[in-house]
Image (cartoon, rainbow, N blue to C red; front, side, top):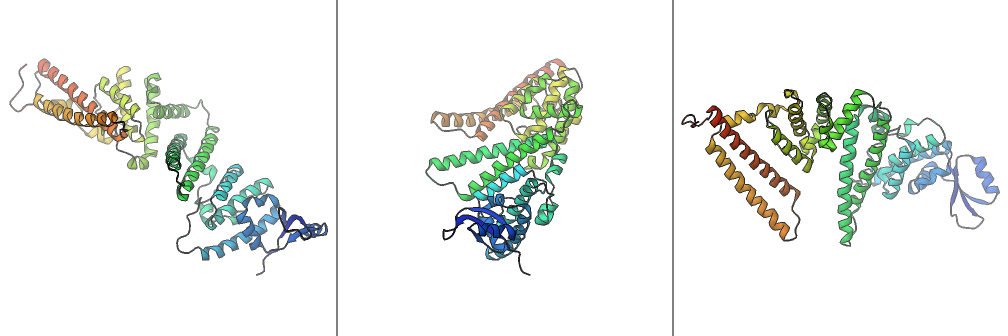
Length: 429
């Protein structure tokens, strides 16, 4: 089957070498008019025209929509030919798929990324992005036949916005910002050593930057559809603020906190997959009868060592504090299965005697001294202390304080109620 002819018109005339392309058209009348005026005109088939567009993606600006449709067919043929020459290990595509309803402004930004990281494997994405841009420019419906099966079957741009909760979009933005900051620091360090940033690293940085920009656009579009006076929206706002600014619980009454806590539960469920790969939580569980002053100290540590892995602990600690503040019974439904199944503060205390608590205190104090001395030694020698080492020191310091508080409570139980679980019988009252 013969391919359609495309005419490429240059700004040069006569015997001058072709320089700038001024137009690409499938209209023979327009091509003849250009020839009559002395312009140089090439007459390649659609596949050759597509190869020129592949090396200079912005040339779509020189076409009308009908010509683009012809060249787009040539891009399909070009890709088939190039796939045969890529070998067994082709580059990975810059974008896995293209949402057919992607806004044209974002399609333009994606296309610029493909210019910076050219590869034959991106031909499908180039064709799809160009179609989105050209369809919007010429007020035409997007031609889905120019999209791969993966792109047609993937969730669309608007569908993703509609079905993704606002807090999830906010969380993704935060995650991408963190990832981009880390990549930028790595790249700056590489450059400071007078080395070149590896291509794959530069590509990952560009992909993360683009994902962040698109996620922010989704977040903005999502928030534009939300009524801020809706109670569900208010609880979302409260829950989101609690994740990023945990101490805002102080501004809530108990009823408002309960609504926010329920929304936090949805967030925790949404992040469950990521939570499994995140660092371990600062506290393994929270006794529902934890003394409120200790709950407050634990909350401060979660502020100092923020992590998405601590969301469940954060919710439990706030519940203990606010239930005490507003003289309400603790809502056990806000506690994880692990927290509910572990021994409570009082239950654990009654299972111990002074000897047990003394030994716990001695061992914890010894471990803390070792970790603290190691950290202080590194500081004294001008070295950075790893975040994990600071975290371990803070955990041991809190554990030591809690064992001390247990010792005080044990003394109170023994001397007030004569309660002691030592096998030799009740301690003297």
